[in-house]
Image (tube, rainbow, N blue to C red; front, side):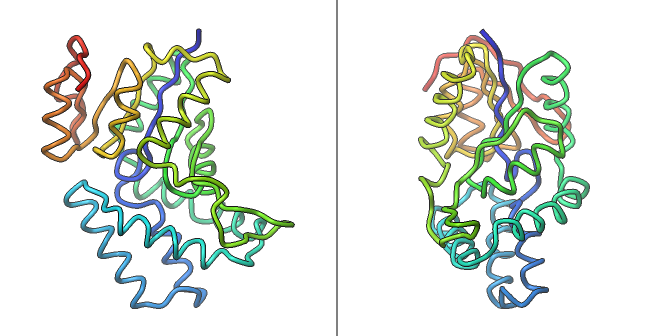
Length: 233
């Protein structure tokens, strides 16, 4: 069976929210107000500092993204992603996690982004990094435009783990030999699903869980703790 490594996006592969540069571009086109942008930037700053994503903040961003996308051409949004993603990768890429992506690629493993962020953005970032692919939250498309509704659940928490399980069945992946990387305690369902979980720049609570279970811990300088026998919490 094949092996894959699954990577959370926000605050794992990239610093902060991948949606922040996207939102700034919308400000310049007049589709997002400056006051709303400052609210989003404040939530992003809290996210980076505490390494904890609030459900209310996540839902607010997703609701606003859906509202802004309603009636927009899919082609135009994909074009915007093409414009901003190289800059996101250049300015926000976490070099420690990027090294882990390259390591898995050298070893012949599949590498996947799995994120609550929009699939369009995730897929473009994955392509920029030469990854196998990406799974993100899907916005409904009708006749080439966005309806303003979701086409499925926000890919978060258990939904993210379920998506990885479904992919493993299709790709013939041995989850006991697969790896997952995340900074968020919300991703515990994914971390316990695989045999090689790694936490990245985790807050105190997630770090304690990781060390108790013998999971690998990555900090800004690289590996902090090597994995021991995994006994999932």
